[in-house]
Length: 202
Ligand code: GRF
Image 1 (cartoon, protein in one colour):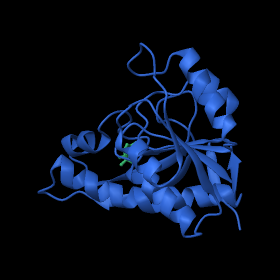
Image 2: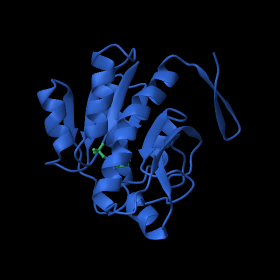
Image 3: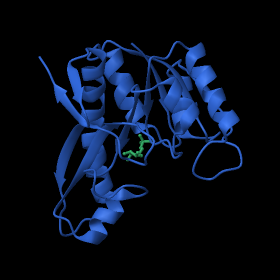
Image 4: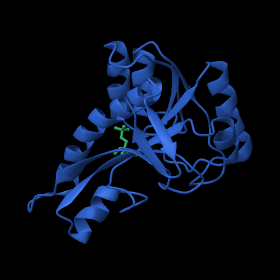
């Protein structure tokens, strides 16, 4: 399966997916990496891994892409034969052009146990709320923000002396484990969707 990765930041989840594909843990190949941040580390990493990497300017908005720009993302994904889109720290809300082009084939990793703590800096929200367990979620992307059907989750403990940084690092270690696993499930088609519920099948 050909995967396109969209990210805005440091690309540690890109690394995890890339390693899983390279080591044959998932029968997939990342064919292109796209970013809304020209000097993002994720683009640099993709280039040094010999993967096509493109900056596509987001346009004037802060939290989403301009429609024409989003259409350009779709065009480039198609140009690279992408069948599954993996958001990995992509800081824009996905709208109609991409949702329509890749309906049911866009996944995201979020650093909380959804539906708790949607949105930005979820680990910090969890810490401020005082929860004893935090975690991460891989989910399908729909028109909402962090609302799509849940594919996989992992839990981590919150320690009394945690800072936002230490908690985020613990969550990220789990992200790097469950994101490739969830993608593997999609690649092997070993899941079924019943309403909102994604279930594993043998
Ligand atoms: C991760 O914490 C992910 O859950 C969130 O953005 C961060 C991306 O990190 N969506 P990286 O760029 O993959 O290192």
